[in-house]
Image 1: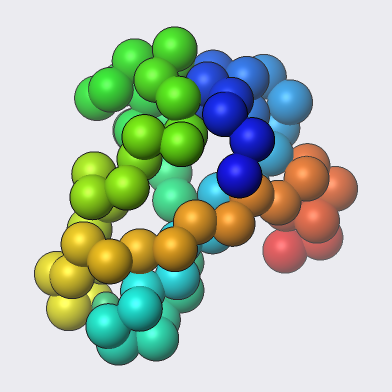
Image 2 (image 1 turned 60 degrees about the horizontal axis):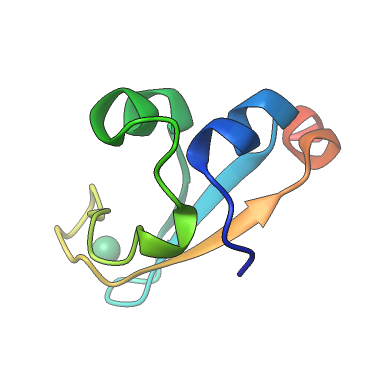
Length: 74
Ligand SMILES: [Zn+2]
């Protein structure tokens, strides 16, 4: 995973998909809410353990960055 800041993803319009290792559920992460909490300069490589599955509460989330065009298609 490239060590980029949250603000960079937002500026590019990228999306972040979180996949829960515990229950197998995946969802789009709200980057704006995340940046408001952690700051836009927060590196995405350090997000491990900071995200929580809203379905089962597990913190074991795998993150995938999606380029802007695939988010718009979604
Ligand atoms: Zn889960």
